[in-house]
Length: 378
Ligand code: COS
Image 1 (tube, helix red, strand yellow):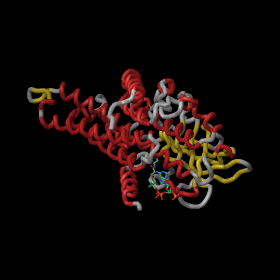
Image 2 (cartoon, rainbow, N blue to C red):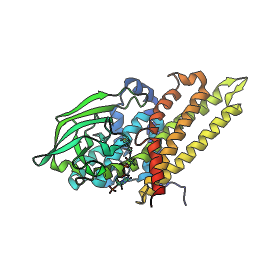
Image 3 (cartoon, rainbow, N blue to C red):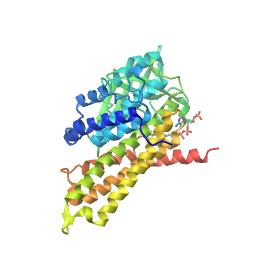
Image 4 (cartoon, rainbow, N blue to C red):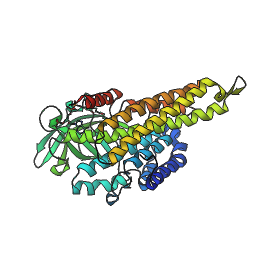
């Protein structure tokens, strides 16, 4: 048992912390108003190695491992939650390619994703297939030596600006065994952005609905073999859930810092409200929540790094971290009173940004289902 970070992990965390404090946090509110992350910041993330933290250096990644990735994600989300979700998806796509791509697919895309030159998107969900991706209806039909994709996708983070989309489509039987996975380049003929969602939070990050009308891809655009799609998606989501747990902790940390700062400054009944026990309890409970969540997230990342199964632990981490984050941001708003309900103070944004972490990459209910099934199996 060792709770010490390695030198590499500390360095990655410190790099992300500095970037988040100096470059992201000062601009997070403005980028939310503009509904746009400054593309220059995304390139800088790439230059710092944060778009492919757990990707081998030979492919342009930082080669720093899954724990370092979780630590970096917490820091980036503390600075700007919208930027963090972009970083999460790009890292997930890069890792999927490393794990399931052939040599040509890796060489073509991973270095560019790692450098922040290209964003990757994860196009699994559909209007009628969210928690149940095995029911998705996008189809891929043989077309000469390639494939033709038709269908619609929903909730695709930066689906409008991604240079590479990992797209799931049905190539065979109904259910999870009939799905395959394809690499589709942004701007492919027939790939249409049908809508950008008007969201509660993460407003600087675009969420697209996409239409695929006869999108043609070559045979070598398939990731893995026909029928591998569901397993690829589930493997990617296992890792992705660690990332979203870490994102939730980062958002909660920003809210926690705002709450403690405000509690020391705000005077009521003649004393800073931090001296009132009701406020102290909220601060104490929030720190306990944060540390418990952080330990579960780091445990899941540590298991992943060791190459042992971590599906259940990733779901536990995401469940606890995102529910904890919601309690923390809610307390932060409460401590701010009326000032917590207006845009002038950041906790209002943190509350809106945190909410989706309990929904995307598997709802809290899906995490409980994964945990329970793994405990009851066999
Ligand atoms: N890793 C690898 N393989 C996995 C897996 C995992 N974590 N989870 C399931 N599989 C495999 C199973 O072993 C099974 O394989 P076989 O067909 O060889 O037996 C197959 O996938 C089907 O598994 P299962 O029957 O458990 O699938 P279900 O349709 O019941 O779905 C859940 C399982 C609910 C876990 C899955 O649908 C899920 O995660 N849903 C949420 C999706 C989600 O997070 N969406 C948000 C996307 S945001 S980008």
